Length: 497
Image (cartoon, rainbow, N blue to C red; front, side, top):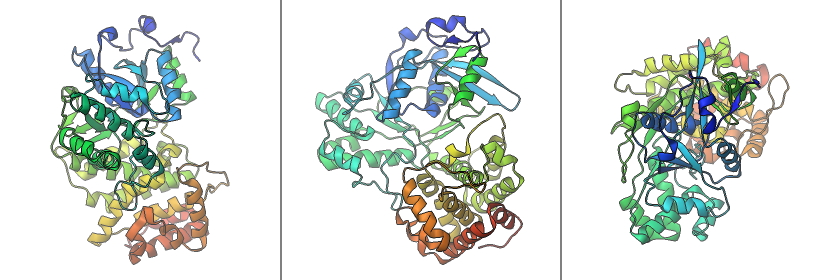
């Protein structure tokens, strides 16, 4: 670590290089308006940054963020951020260099505790007008096979039976709303910032689905009074490790949890906030009544595109997404799948065509300064394939267009879940259902249909002969001749499945 690096905290801000932007506002004058559950890197590089920009412009001083979490790992983040007065170093990674700034829009982080009493009490405070979440795509208790709320999940069953001391973020939200309703304090908006199509609608379904299990009258009040705006969020934000901590130190900052990010952000939001909102649109966010078109473009071209790369990259021991794009076989595979099998099922949005967006994503993925690990992108494939890849596959089957490359994407995932790369190294568990996936992957080596019989993921797709046959051919080829042989055969062929 750089010897001259100073610990990041409020008192030491004046010790940093004058070239590093920092809060121009007095953080002592801020008051809370938002509770954010799930304080990871993405939130700090995205929503918190937009709010920080507003505060630097002299606005939104009553919209400061209070962080929260419901998982054990959140307590570790709380400890790190509390030690540095909840400040975060944001490091922008451009192909031609880096820059840093200090973000100060978070002012507290609630204790992470069983029963979530502190979180419930804070959300019940009438000063809180928005509760936002980044709890990952798989954190909304949705059955991947049906796409509907899963009332049988053990945590949901627990919260329904113990609503006063819930385990989940959604149980805590309901408990806080019960207090507010009973005290006549009014509702708050619940804003998902996760990469889910219709994230606001999904959040609403989860909150109402859980509330109905224990208090149907409260569920009716929530449905009537609260709003759940849909949004589309976009910024590539790698995980933090020793390299990121060293990058902060190179700027003279000792930060235990710095965040690196690409030089691109996008936030498209449905303007439905029952208790008001910050003026995010004045600092780059887009408010629109048609979030769906933007999120479809992003989720299909970027998020599904990530899955096109990640499993092939893991099997070939390519450490980062940029490494995948630098590999001629993987990038040719990615480009063909995107342009021929994904882009045709994406509508243009104002100011951007689907093919142009694919070119933008290609450049972003290829940025060598972004050390976005293949492992991170491949994480939780059971949710990400179901949410990002399979909807496009269904559209292709319905339209009679090629799905050969998408079937290969699924075959590569099945091969990756066998747990070993082609160089013989082990793939560490990388999915909440890793043990079950390994069992299926091993069975599918001899009988490919075994993989598709995961009804909670594939549903009726397992009965589609065109997909089943294409998947089986690719998985058999991968096991017999290897990943590169499959990639090259697909990229060099124009034969539809």
